[in-house]
Every structure is written in C-alpha cells, then in structure tokens.
Length: 401
Image (tube, rainbow, N blue to C red; front, top):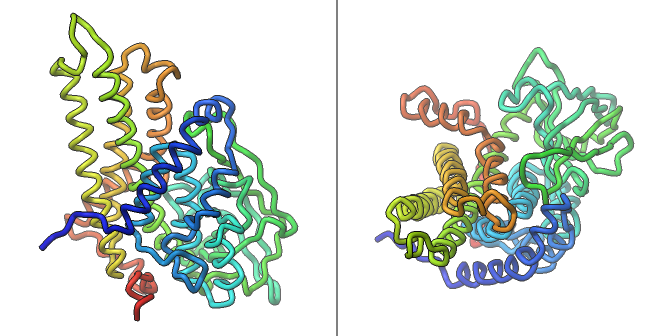
C-alpha cells in the first residue's frame, strides 16, 4: 500500500524549518533583496540547528536523515527566499553529498565532517564562461607536478563564491579528451592563487551570493583529488543528481509561496463589488498553481524515495527538476498577474518570486536540457551509459546495516 504521509520526524523537521523561515528570513528579505545583501548569519543558524548535514550519516557529523528530509528543508527555505535554499542546495546537494559518495576516508574526515557540522561551507565550481550545459568544454587546466596539481582557469556563476571555505573544482588534464579528461579537486579558499569576485546585475536572487572563482597557479595536493584522474565528469553528473533534486524541492516551496500570496490577495482585493477570487479566470490561475504544486510534490518525493532506496534516479530527478521549476515560474507569472499593477512593484513579494523563479529553469540543467533528456529516455536513446561505473549512492538504510 502506498503511503504519502510524512513521518513524525519529517513533520517535526517541517515545522522547525517553517518557523525558522518565518522568523529569520521573511521579516527581512525585502530589505536584503533591495540591498543585494546575503545574510550569512542565516546559514550559521542553520548550522547551529544541525541542518547543514541533514542527510549526511551521523558518523560524518550529519543528522542521518533521508533525502526527503533534505527536500523538506529546501522547500521551506525557498518559501522564505531562493537565496537561502540555493546556499543549502550547493553546500549539501552538490558538495557534501558528492564528498560522501566519492571521497576517501581522509577527505571525509577533513572536509565532510566540518561541513556537516556547519563549521565550514562548501561550493561547486563546474560552470565556466564558455562551458555551461556543455561541461565537456571546460578550459580550466590541471597539470600534474609531483605530488601536486597546478590549476589555472576561471569559474563563473558559482553560488556562495564569496563565502565558501571549500570548492569542488573540475579541471581538465587533457582538453582533447573532452569529458574523459576532466578530474575533480577539493580546493580550499586559502590555497595560494584562489580569488573570488561577485557577479553584479543579476535579474533575480538579489539576496544571494553569486560570483566568479579565479585560479592562478593554484597548487592542489594530490590527496585532494576526488576520485581518479578522468572521473571528474562522472562525479559532476552524480553531484547534479543531488543538486537537481534540491532545486526541484525548492521549486515546490516557491510555488506554495505564490499560491499563498495569490489566495490571500484574491480574498482581499475586490472588483465589480466582489473579491477577485470569485472571478473564474483568477480561480483558473490559482487552480493551476494548486495542481502544479501537488504534481511537483509527487515527482520530488518519488525521486527522494528512489534515492533513499539507493536506486538509480537520474531520469526521475531530471523530470522532477524540469516540471517543478516550470511550475514555479508559471505560478510566479500568474501570481503577478493576479496582483495586477501591485504585482509589478515590490509592495508585494510576487515580483521577487518571478525574478527568482527564472533562475530555477536555467541552473542545474536548463529546461531545454531536461526536455532532451526525457525525450531520449522515452525513445530509448539514453540509458545512462556514461555513468554506468558510478559508485552506489549512500542511502539511509546504510546507517542501519
């Protein structure tokens, strides 16, 4: 029998993070957004609550909860603002979960434990000015020199670039090998030659930190190589399975924020002598949000269930990310429409929702990339052969083994 209910532990977590967003983000986010200010204390407080390692095993400093617990956190944080869900997605989904899956025991002790405890922050550095969807085209070079590698290049659109302590950096040992030449490295901010700078003029997520990471003759110990030489592309794609899941979960929170704001306004605003919620075309937009939210939840928690079982979930996670992100963007557009002229100003939060929602359909694989992926799966043209040697993901059941 299917059980769609959250466990008592998950309900308790949901209540905790919902209250956190209400107290620590919502009262201040308009000001932070207007001033392009990222409040690091929010992340510090999440660490104090033990939420920055929610689905990392307890032996590595985490809470040992499941993937859907991470989905709950991401959804509730995005309800407050995309900026803080993004920080958690990058720290846990893209960085820490990747260290858990691919790292050596020494790497886990040195980096994963302090990250899980909230003492350090992790980021993910794959995208470059000329390499986004086409990850095989990255130009950052790594040259072996004895027991170190020398890295040169630049990364862009890196979330938490100005605050992360550790970066998961992808560089090529041989550009002619394309995907096969990519190798992953753990790069500390304090390594000589590492500099960062913020990206200005973003459309949305004004309250978040996004920047460039510049690497100039950065010497990285061979002990900081993640996986074997040439395994970087597989590692990056496995990381995206976790990162995309967290984005999809965040999109649920944004859709719910759009729905709640629209329902509230539709009940208060009157035209032609009645609340606008009684007009059928407004009802239609609200109904679409409700249907989209429930569809997103089913897809996200199904992907989480597969992750919890340790089963392959690239196809399901891609579908959840694509659908949930599209739903969030459409919901934000409708929320602005429902609010009319007020929706076009920051007197109401829906204009921020719409600006933020656009990022969801771009990063962690564009909407178009996921569309192609789903078509190729359906046509039998894609069978995850590239990742056939990927290490099995950790599942919560491993803690009980």
